[in-house]
Amino acid sequence: MESKLQSVSKEIQGLEDDRKAIRSQKDEFLSATALAQDTLNHNIDTTTAKVRLSERKLQNITQEWVQQHATNEQRITNMQHKLSRENDLKKQAESTRQSVLKELYISSTLVG
Image 1: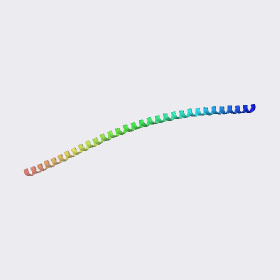
Image 2: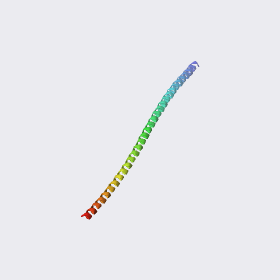
Image 3: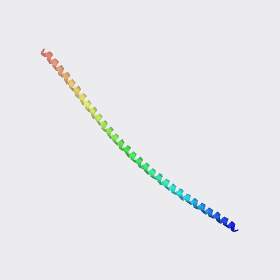
């Protein structure tokens, strides 16, 4: 009887040891899980910050491009107006030259 009692007592002690080992493994698992979660959260935060920075950079580049495009368009428009005015002046000068040549021709034929 006593040997059965000792056998059961040893079995109970073994089960208690197993329970302690399982609790220890559980604690280690929970600790590792918490560390992994912290690492994951940190990585998410870091990536989110990088994405926001990239978005701001893209927005700045886009705004700069839009401004530069508008400036270039204005320069093109100004140059077109300038060329148009120059062409008008050239036409006017040619017309005046033709008129002067006609007058000179008429004058020279009347005098001659």
